[in-house]
Length: 420
Image (cartoon, rainbow, N blue to C red; front, side, top):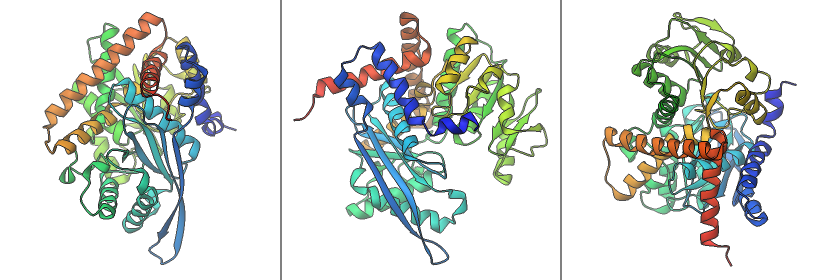
């Protein structure tokens, strides 16, 4: 069995293993360890949908709230055929740590439905979204749990969730979700926020390594919202994008690729494959191509024990959640690759979601420039705090980020206490 498939089943176990290692380094009590390992709430629901054919189909849905000690739960909703409870639990845990490491007052949550959204019509997708919202409606809310877009969902899906929730309440509740359309109270800059946060993290990583130039080659694995945004921003800053991949394949051109042009191609064809200005390759070939910077921005468990030895990048910035397995982590460390971990590098999305939540609560909205400057400030502060901790404790960036995050969550648990 391919190791990337076998480890996918244990993504929750891998998340817990990393958490346990961190908690041991912090010498947490056994009680706190038990508390932080256990999600606060797990919902599994049957999402009943009337299809265009008139038949009824049922899809399995989840919503997990891992921790709410630092504030309301926050996390995306994923529509994907491979969604499973272990994955959702692991991603909720990562959200807890992500919010803590960048210092925003949220806990962690995640949701998902086992479905291929591309196989549904627009009407069916709306029906599924509204029914899923109805099934979890008592567990979400602007002071309780605030969903956002993730893989397979977008601003339109958030609009349907907001509308369904608002109809139930009898009045408009824009704060129930973030990542909404601008017309419904969304924030400027939210769509590209995760990719922009990846760029800010990369620029900080280059700076602490005494690199000021942008004359570096970048490979982007995954060309969805995160990967495409990061690619376009980096290209505009002067970096050379040499490779891009998606589920259909990899395109490569050592002379450089214009991601704006690739984006337009992908809008028409639904894939980067077939782009005429680059050589086509297999999807997994991107991990062995020569580059200075690799940005995994697809799904979890993409860099594994079998392909990690072939990676030739000097820097890896994790645009996706949990794209590197623990076994691969050790190999990357031995190779001397500087890794900016997911809970730090891709926290731009949840940070601007926080901005959207604040703006909605105040009914006062900021310019795109204000949003981007505030995002840069938070991302840079979090990076340098993590880097300082890594230097002080003589650990890698992933361990340092985890230690900062877990300590902040543990402090919140101690200060609030256990009721009753």
